[in-house]
Image (cartoon, rainbow, N blue to C red):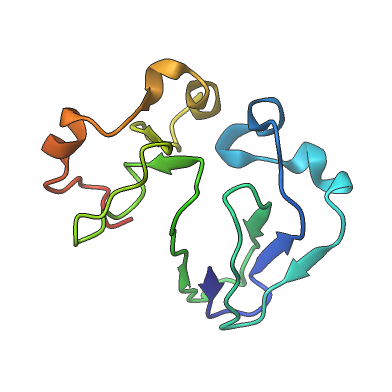
Length: 139
């Protein structure tokens, strides 16, 4: 991941386990902040590799700041949010062991639903039908 605004992204040099017992709404980890250790602020243009289990956050920006941020997801992720991730234009899909989540993570009770097996799907025919272009695909 990277951003064009220095000091706008914080990351902790650790990896979380037992997500179902630790994360709050939208990945909230505020209750763990004091135990995460020292944070690192990324410089503008600094590129960092991390896993989806590495705590990181976007920090508040001054009014009017234009920030560009990107995250390139490669492999070995735990969860793939189909409504918030742009499909690969070459048709490359997440590996079979990645849980595909088909709900909007910004809805109420998203964290509760995250660990509800009813919301976890593998690649299936429904995904192939949806592949044509979700409205949220560009987010």
